[in-house]
Image 1 (cartoon, rainbow, N blue to C red):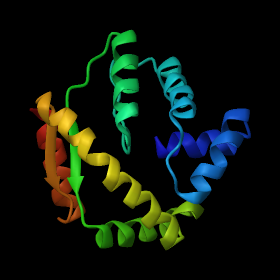
Image 2 (spheres, rainbow, N blue to C red):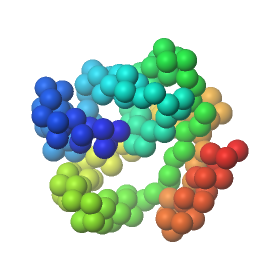
Image 3 (cartoon, rainbow, N blue to C red):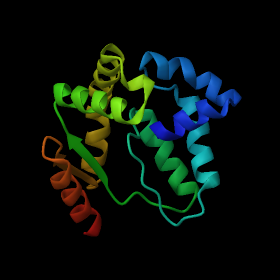
Length: 157
């Protein structure tokens, strides 16, 4: 969803202009704006399945996603949570910013704000998917290759 948000901003659309200040500050996008982005994803997708990365980030977005899936006659198969320390997440995000030119990922304060908000919100999200029997937790401190292999194994199941 982060890429979708950046695409929307780069397009110069009215929605992109509304999203920009939130992304710049590293705070979560309000539900009403995220719902528009999510609606665009489903409207543009002709595939039989989707994979979201970095979404949902708030419990309201969980319900939004569940509703959109139902409307599109889809179901969530699993939720993968990469368990990573804040310090390691900051290091990796900054590395990604340098290699990928993502301006919003270059500011440590913005990154830490985004991660702190996620930490506050994630407990309810993880509990929701754990109770639904769809949560898979993977050690995100492993090498990229090991993490990738673990994710592939879970998807194949």
